[in-house]
Structure formats: C-alpha cells, structure tokens
Image (cartoon, rainbow, N blue to C red; front, top):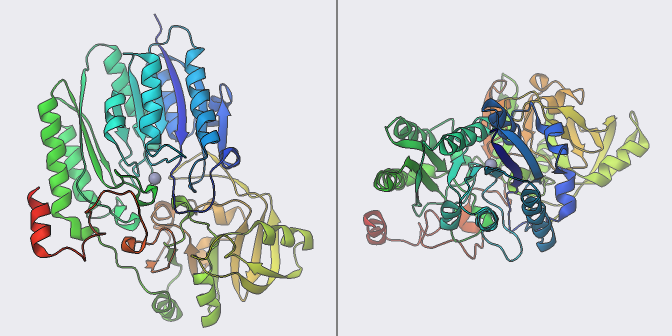
Length: 502
Ligand SMILES: [Zn+2]
C-alpha cells in the first residue's frame, strides 16, 4: 500500500521587541497558501517545502498539503493569525483519510500572543490529533528548542548552515528518517541540552570558528553507530522566551543513554569556548575611512543592527547619514524599506528629481528620517527570481521598487522589507554589484552566501538597532538567567567557575 504523508509549514522568527505586529496580512505579503497552491509554488525549489515534496516522492509516498504560512521576521504573531494557521493545519490533517504520518517544517523561534512556545504548542496539538503516528519536523538554525518540542515530535532536524543553504537537504533528511520509522527500522530516542549561552547572530556564521568546531563535532557523532541525526541550533535572542539561546539535540536509535551523553558533550564543548562567540564590530566612521583609501572594490559593509531577517524595520538611516556626511560616492544600498518614497518616485517617474524624507519611520532605534534630494533612476514592480545559493528558484517580491541616486550613491528603495540574500537583487534593478565601490547590506550573516564571492573585504558595522550584537543592551524579560554573555560583566570569576562546573 502506498504510504500517505500529510505536510505543512509554519515559519516565523519573532522579534518581540519589534513594533511591527505580525498579523495575517504579514503572512500574505510573503507566503500564505493552502492545499494544491503549495506544490504549485514550491515543487522544484531548493526550500524546506520543496524538500518535503521531493522527500516524499523519493520514497513513492503520496503527500497531502495542508497550509504553508511564512512571514518576514517581525514582532509578536497575533492570536488571530496563530489560531487561523494552526486551525488550517489541524483541519487539513483531519480531512485526510488513512494517512500514515505528518511531516512539517517549522522555524523554532516563533512567539504568538499567549504562546511563548509556538512550535511546542503546534507539535502538541498535532500529536493530540494523530496519536502515535510518526510526527517529524525540520527547523531553522535559529530555533529556540524547548522540552515540549522534543517530547511531542518523533524526529527534529535543524539546518546546519547560516547562511541557510541546506534547508532543502534537512527537510529531505527528515523524510529519510520518517521512512526508516515507517519501515520499523527506527525507534527514535532524543536528548536536548542547552548551555547557558546566548550567541549574537554574527557569531553564528557557520563558515568560521566557533560554529565550525561545534558542527564538525556533531557531524562526527552522526557517523557513530546508533546515532541518527544531531542538531546544533544557535538560537534567536529576541524571541525572549525562557529557552532562547543555543541548543543541541541528539537522536539515536533506541539508545537514550547515548543520546544524553552526546548532547551533554556538545553542550559542554560550547560552554568551554563561549568567549569565542563574542563579536567585535567596527565603528561606522572607521569603516568609511577604510573605504576612502581602498584600492579594490567592492567592499561590503554589513549594517548588522538593522537586519530585517531578525525582525528589524529595514529603514534604518545611520549608515546612509554617515556616508552622506563623509561625502562618499559609488555606494549601493540594499535595501531601504520606504513605501512612501517608492510611491513618490514612481509618480514622478525616471529622470525626475524628487525630495523625500527617507527611512527612520518605524521606531526611534534605527536613526531619524533623512531629507534628501534624489534622482529617480528606475522604477519596477520589484519581482525577480533567486539564483542562489540560498532559496534558489523562488520568486522574490520587493513590491513597488525605486532606484534613487542620492549624492552619487544608488539606493534600492522597496515597498516590502527584505534582506539582501542574492545578487539578483541588484542585477534585476540594473545595478552591477561588482562595479560598486561599496555595498551596504542590511543583514547579519545571510548576505555572506552571495556577497562573499564578490567582496574584496567584508566589514561588520557597529550600528545600533534591534539585531545589534550588544545583547546586554536589550531589556529581555523572559530569557533564563544567568546566561552568557548577558550576565558576563556582572559575574565574578567564582560564579563563572561555578557555572563551568554545573
Ligand atoms: Zn534563520
């Protein structure tokens, strides 16, 4: 008999300090699909949703889609949006006859009104509905795992990469393990360990130490007999839940002792190298001086404090103001979110000069609006296809988009918030990124996958904002304490030693 698997996706990284409320319209702006709309959008793409489909087809499983909901990172998910998405998922499962298992993709750092542990609650609700049938899930590397999540799901597989270039592979892996369970060859035993460690996003880059050290260890463990999959999750501080921070999950085949021991080893290793997770960004003016004397181009400047991928507004103006003050030219800014400026530019049309009050509209943390004179170079619908390496094959919709030339620099001004993940962002707008003297990206780490190959140098700027690595400056309320590095400066050597021993 052909096996039948029910699929779904609910993905949001919630920054509870952001004042952009995540209601259903925020999901509609990105992806909110049901049933057959889902394969129509994701079949053949290198995404988690595409991986679930291909994984099923690899084993000859029939699949039935329920809901696919994902929104750009932003503030708290409203109760209404949470209940509707979960309801669609549960109702979708209820309508399927004779299914064998459920395989879903979740983010792992979602927070909704009344639900600190969205993924635990989603998995728990599905578990209640499906009884003992297998339930497998893949997760983002920024997941904040909870004991409930690990209890309710049979299999949890997290991305190994940041920038995330293996979401497809990890979703396929979750179906591989499901197939093994359905064959009766796998009885998963799981262990979760969490050192008191809250790494800033910039230190979570998996292309360099210290993350490489942890991942190498995890991959070696995966080669051991009886070990099925090992997840290293760096966590997302701004979800501000008790469990936010780094987690390790080891899944073995019917060997709880082995799972516990290995997860404990990874947790101890991370704690022992905790100081290597501290980040030292460069002051903006110092970076701009380097650009003035640079002989090669382009230099990529990462505005790490305003990364919409971590839920920030994407309209911060600190870097633009400094560039204009210093009189630098030849820069490209990807991107600045300002729907009103994009609309004004579209009304005026290419070749016209406009005056706009640009950016800084959302809150007081990311700089003030800047009054600038701008030449409208180009106006477009902001639609383009991702060439990779992450999200290859998917369509990006920036909304109405204008290229504004301001004092010799090109600004990509969009109607939707997005991170510069792909070089097509520039090329689709008639900008060749390799010709730029410098490129300013509003991103913490994701830009690296596409920008490293062209960058002569990458500089992380010490910009204020909701994704700044200066974590001690945020008023977190629920994260468990003490935790490194938040309490680092308050703790003496004795307390740290005690934490070492625990
Ligand atoms: Zn992520």
